[in-house]
Image (cartoon, rainbow, N blue to C red):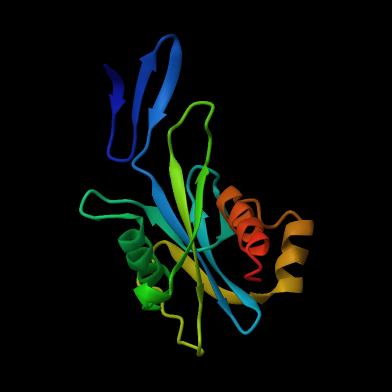
Length: 162
């Protein structure tokens, strides 16, 4: 039985454990000219802006994680990805101690520069490409704290993609 059944997540107690059920999400590293694309958005739970790779939750209408990432990248950046060029890197468990949330990680190499036009202006305040050295400066300065972004870059490096 659920203690809470909301729009995004559900909370239940099972064998003494409080467990959060989440529909999952997809995220994508977009790479162009040795640069990593990040979106800046306000996160209400943190009460601050964060730099992250484009990502979003899997909606009930989505057939799979790939369709989610195609939709989310367009909404957050204005970029239409070619589905056949998406590379699936794997999945991460965000908080396995109390949640079943899985984020599917994709990689996409842009072949030409594109106009960055976020469709969700209420959520995304900025979209920008960062060189690898700028990205790692942000990490060293603790300006990128988002776990999916940090994990995803590690996965891309392990696959020799960046």
